[in-house]
Image (cartoon, rainbow, N blue to C red; front, side, top):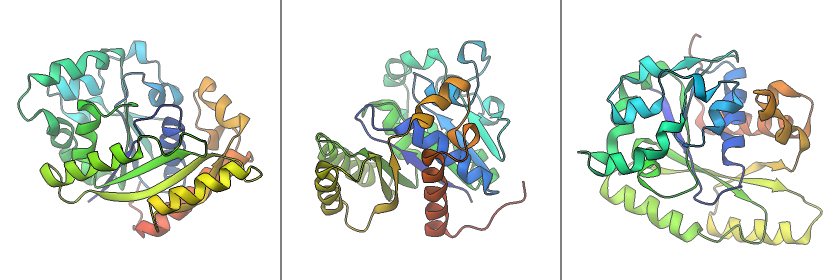
Length: 260
């Protein structure tokens, strides 16, 4: 059975979508079958894979709200072993529509269950909030990967995120665990970076990845071309960092590759 990894942080601008797109692409490039589910109404992960959100006939909105089978909304990407469950602008109103729904917190888990065996990994890209959509992703996930920027406010809100994960574990998903913590926008030359890293390691002992993501122009440019950075410029520092993260992630999971 495939593993579902939720990439979540309620703070915006921490490299969450960049990490979702590039980790998914890098793991796919290593021969593993990967689904990236874009649950953010902004749809940046969808656009980052070269898909025009405005032309979609089916999206994750239809899966969550209209009970469409996920298999009918999943799209193959031009990148090795990578599929996407895309987002659309309709998802912006989904939180309000979910409020009145039965089992509103488990819609995504129920929808992904029939396709979970078809993939080695399912990565979930979340909105920058702890609302109903993010609650759905936490209920659907086996583990949580937390990107944290190496800046002054990095730890702000982490207690709330951890408390939310614990509450989800107690009420809805007893098996959820922390997959790992990813340091983004890393600049080892700065004393502040070293201080933030030390605090994060205290907060998440033994969960911080050795691979770190630097500030990198190529990472910022790649989405405008509809390409993951590992395809846009394989030799860039950003691409190398995500390839290293993929290797570390796979080593931690020690998963056998499926036949594509």
